[in-house]
Length: 532
Image 1 (cartoon, rainbow, N blue to C red):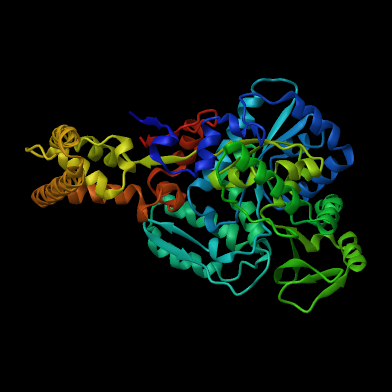
Image 2 (tube, rainbow, N blue to C red; image 1 turned 180 degrees about the horizontal axis):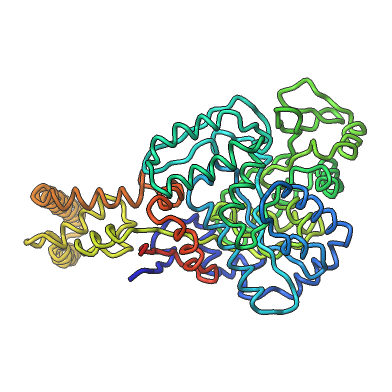
């Protein structure tokens, strides 16, 4: 079978809160807008009333300007955003080098598929897939590498501040190193061309990322947006001022968190810790936190101190110098986009759930939240191995030791499962407990001690038997371990480690279209697919 779906609860790889979202936990219904197979009429109306003609014109003007020099831009989709019936389906992500891990692609494909499926309903609206570049992030170490066939390709740069503004200097040398690992196939040549066109021919990482993502997904009408722009930040000014003066996000996120814990009747970890001010100050090659300081404000790790009045004037004069953190970024996104859906990972959904009261305080509608698709991709050869050894897809998600013991029990010519013996022992000790109770209750402690000793002895014996059989079946054990390591590099989900280039080298131009065909955002299970 080419496609198998497994419920997330069975693979145990999602944060607990995200699992509850997937399962539709009624305790969470007041904290977010669940994703639906059709647009929400109330959302459509709210976005039409909120985002005026001028705001849409500014958005379209900025996007068009950012696409200058890009071949075959998605003009129809961009233009549709200038009209009151144009809406967005959005995902956001860091500017990972050469897309980074596979799930970067999955998030984007989800937005493309939702827009396509909703447009097919022909309800008189236009739905546009948008990739929001997290160009203002400053954690360069998270994005400066990617892995292909186990080889980590790394870029060193000494700049600081917003990564989207980083110069691409040095990436030509990265390409030379990478080419040595690519080989001489047509697919390798195409990967080289994409890298050259994006990272060598563009001056900043933001521009390079836009170029690459357009090369991969432009044909599907995806619009790439870099919101690190003065004209877009101007629309965010009232929200920046409110955050600075009232510490809105911290107060409201705290309120939401308390309500969430009460609704779920259990303590909840905050995915993102809300600060007194959830903004950074962007200047030159630095992006530094802002703190309140004796009636004014200070920029952390600098000697820059502002009076309250001067800083608020700074916001109005230079809004581009103010950058939202992870918790306030969703607010900025929803301010400038006519957005209906946000597609994110499990951890992202967790911090969106912190924002119910923040959105309310800023008088903004929250979008529907959609957990991105997750995949395990197998080659035909890997699938044949799994079938040969009697492994189901769900087996592959087991911790390696459990997987090996599971398989050893299956293929062993002796019965190593001592569960029956343990059950029989339970019955025998139940009799002894009853007997002790009827004769002399002081013997209960002795019976309990003996029970513990014998059960421990059986557990030890079972482990020794398994160990002996594992040695006897070492060939199968080794091959099963190797297969799992191929599919779960470093013991982590494939999608979080492997770059798409690994599969492009094997499947070429068929790879991304195959993913687009098989990923269905309306499904809610983990997807295992076998490439043809």
